[in-house]
Length: 464
Image (cartoon, rainbow, N blue to C red; front, side):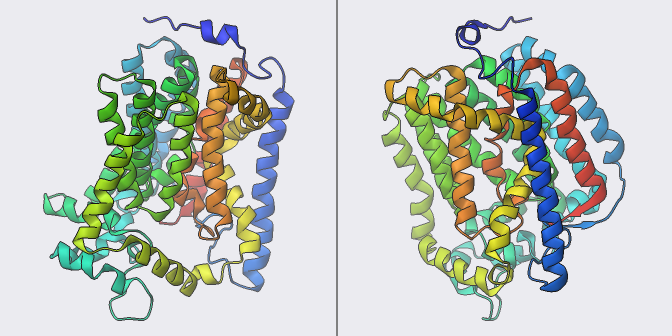
């Protein structure tokens, strides 16, 4: 077994390591209160105005207590992580830990999805009237489909795209078109693709935290990255796949900037390539620029910028040459958004109820970790100027950058509801905040994370 080097930790203890437990509980309680308030206010608005377009506010879900095959598997996975996760995270060799985390994250996402059954939980999710697989036949001529993509975004003209196809750049739909072309067509393969790739986001986050804040904090974060309530939505939508693409962009840039790979320039090029792809999977993923910027700020280097920018241009240039205009499509999407539910959902409610959705998706442990993050921000910012940031302060900066991206998405008004699903690429980077929690209560916090996920998936039928 490998023994973890704790010198960096002993040199600079965690913020409020031996105190703050009550404040941590208060932060988790405040998150729960926000959820209750969003539910009560949301029900009142929906019962009178019918403008929220969700059945169980603040989540896009319906009250539907049920069990399924995953009912027996998910608690077993959760119990294994709660009991053994913290110890294994400290003792396993690094590569073994990465493989174990991926396998466990995959099992957690899959078992949660199977609570709804194979068909309704996985195979049929991406075949509904709003989803990408509904238009596979319209991409027989990919070039023509791309050239005419923007003509079908708005509601009104004949043949307008379903909601999710219109709401994303064509890179999202093309993923499933290409899967179909290689013989992996249909909802089952599409669902499996999203789950298998989505679980890889955990690895990207671990690698990034290790590169920027040290292995000690990556190991502390590992069980919380694996056993996150957001896994409920990672297994039921394409956003888990989008999350992984964006996360690997950040991870590769972190490896390039810290020069912890043999070919830093190649890693930076790959980071840019994935960022460009991410922007053509979802318009909102342009905001991943903030965590990417945090990587460069923390490493105090601009060396990877040139290969990163070159890589980032590849996908946009390819789509532009194929006839797709990203900027025009985005402006048409804004118009389409206000043609539909987005034009009726009240900003005054969703601007804070979105955060209640996030509180559910990140879980109480992350909320407690974010409380410690907020407390450490002033000190972390001061040390950035001098380049003397400690490992916990570097973690705080990374988490804070993701939180800023999430808040920007919230204030934009283009994320009203469904953010438990849409914001997965930002939520991923909030989860490592739980590494700041003191060791004695980690199993209790992990249990709380599992309870939230199991309760949501057993009591509610989640949308998309």
